Image: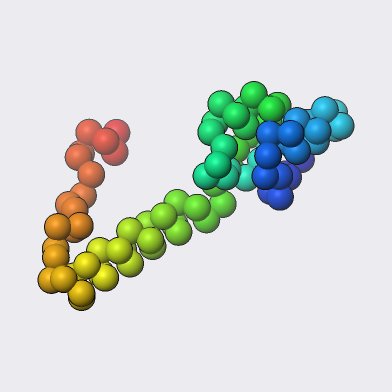
Length: 85
């Protein structure tokens, strides 16, 4: 497995996948879908810290709304129990 985290376009992913003889692991990008990445030849997609930064962004947005507007509407409970499996 070749980990290629710096690839930003389907053209770059395709070029690397065609140039090597082993599977390629690509870092997910907001501008590319799973279909785009897999269609370009990647065998694995890593998220890195993206889910953590997404959660941090949501927490900052909620805290800012509370601080600036007294708005608690962005607070949410835990996910449904069936979501967790």
